[in-house]
Image (cartoon, rainbow, N blue to C red; front, side, top):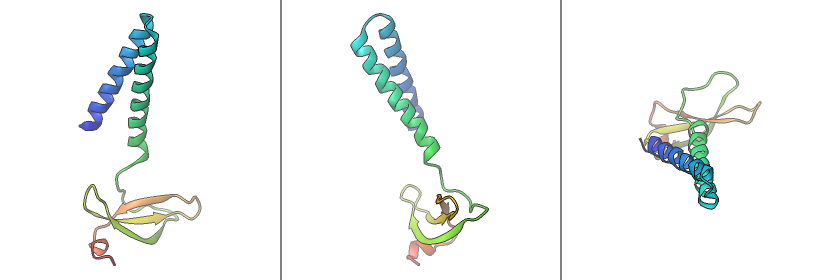
Length: 102
């Protein structure tokens, strides 16, 4: 819900900035347009970049020894690594090994 509110406020700021520029009020118009666009793009990028924990991936993925508790969900998470691309994925674990530090 917070994400929706942030996107709505950023869109309103961007729209007000465009209206101000169209009316010839340049300084505040550019400021509102830039602020709204930056917040809007940043919020949309955040959704794409930071994904939720996934199921174990298929392919050349290898388990690492990295395990931790996700602070937002309190669930154990395991790190998977693809040696071909260097990509890392964070996969939710079904057992409780990460909570015990094993």
